[in-house]
View 1: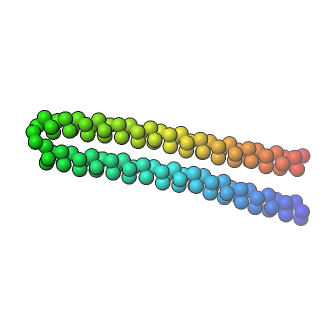
View 2 (view 1 turned 90 degrees about the vertical axis):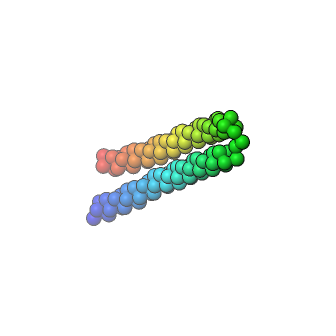
View 3 (view 1 turned 30 degrees about the vertical axis):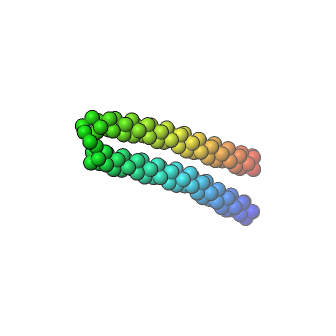
Length: 123
């Protein structure tokens, strides 16, 4: 009877640990998702602002040369902004990858420890 109770307790511990592990991974994923959505909204805002600036430039320019110069300036600024956002996205990917790797290594170590304890009891 004691063996059955130990097995039930072990299964309960494994289920609790599994749930906690899944919750941690879900938190990492949700945080990354929110950061990606925020970055996409910022990029969309940048594109919309650039479009508005282009419309203003075309409507207020005195001649063709001014439009061309203004378009070149807007294009340069937009390119710089998009490069900055690309760097931020790469950093986010790396950071999320490190978090997932840390989560995996931590859970692997915990699993190995529990398996070792079960093996010791069985021996």
